[in-house]
Length: 287
Image 1 (tube, helix red, strand yellow):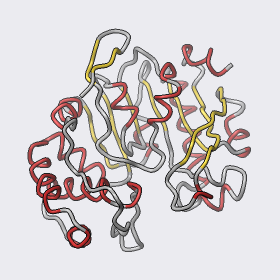
Image 2 (cartoon, helix red, strand yellow):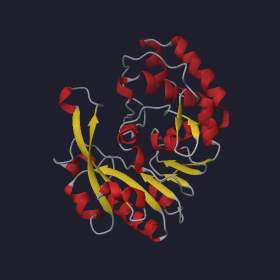
Image 3 (cartoon, helix red, strand yellow):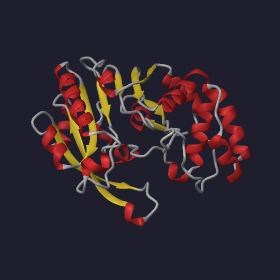
Image 4 (cartoon, helix red, strand yellow):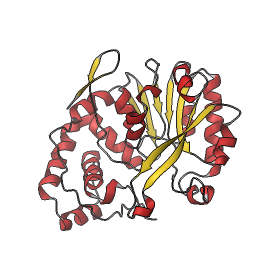
C-alpha cells in the first residue's frame, strides 16, 4: 500500500480491485493534471474498474453501471468487505484449471459469494476480460495468473471510500441528469479503439449504439447548462468529432491497447478527450 500526494493532503493509493477492458489507469499515468482538484459530488455513469474514482477518492460520489453483477460486487465490498475476502481466500487456496471451470459454472446465492466469484474469475481468466454469452453466462477461459489475494490488497480502504458512494444499476442518462452545479462527471462509454478508422459504427453497435452516443451528447449538453464540469473519453472517430465539435473542447491522445490474443490486436491507438467549457484547468492542456 503506497501513499501519494494529492496536492492538498497525503492519502493512500487505492488500486482498482478489477481489471476491465477500456480501463483508464493509462489516462491517470499520462495526464494526472486533467482532473479538477475541487468539485461537489463525483459522478461516474460507466463505472467498470473505477480507476478514476479510486484515483480521485471523492468525498461524495454516485457510481453507476448497467452491469448489475458489477454494481453488486461494489455493494458487497461496501457492506461487508471481510465476507468477500473470506471467500476470495478460499478461491486463492483452491485455484486450479479444474476449480476455475467449476466456479465459472456455479450459481452464487448471496452478494458476497457473487462478488468473490466475479473478482476471482477476473483475476485468473484470460487477460482479465469480462465477457458473457447470449444467456448472460461468463465464458472467458482460464488465463495464466494464479494469485487471487495479494499482500497489498486494501479492501478495507475500498469499503471506506465506497461508504460515501451511492451505487446504481442504471442507464447513464438517469445518472448524468442527477448531477448539479459544481459537480464533476467522468464519462467513459463502451467503445473499441481497434476500429476508430474502420467500421466504427458497425464494430461498436453491440457495445454502445450510435443512438446512445447521441443521447449521451444531449445529456452532457444539459449537464453543462446546469453548471456541471465533465471529462469524457471516447473513440477518436470523425463522426464523434463532428457530433461534439460545436459544443465542447476536444483533443486526441495516444494510448496502447493490450487486451487482445494476437499481436495484430495490440498497439497504439488514439482516443478522444472531450471536456466541458467549465473545466478551466483542463482547457490549457487541450488548446
